[in-house]
Image (cartoon, rainbow, N blue to C red; front, side, top):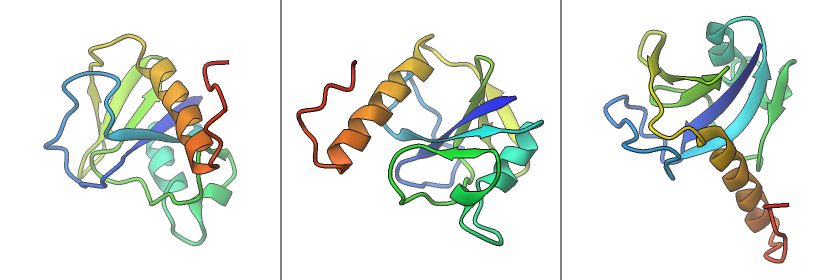
Length: 124
């Protein structure tokens, strides 16, 4: 099962902030994780014994400055969205159907900016 991981850009580590609209500029697509259950996503995207970007089943998205998944981060799988709580995950309803596509576009734009390539058209 594929899970897309979105980290809160400011790392507020709180579930108090829930996005009022999708996509929301405070969350960044940081990884695609192939695993059996959402609980494994948390373990696979945390720096435990090694940098989580080297864990099996994890595809890093964007730059190399990723922190561990924490409270307030969001995971999407099969069109359903979950926010990381102090204990487990809570399903949340996206308010805009194109959340994933918009975040993927934003991830391409972010990568282009980080590489200093402002001439790249991430829409293609």
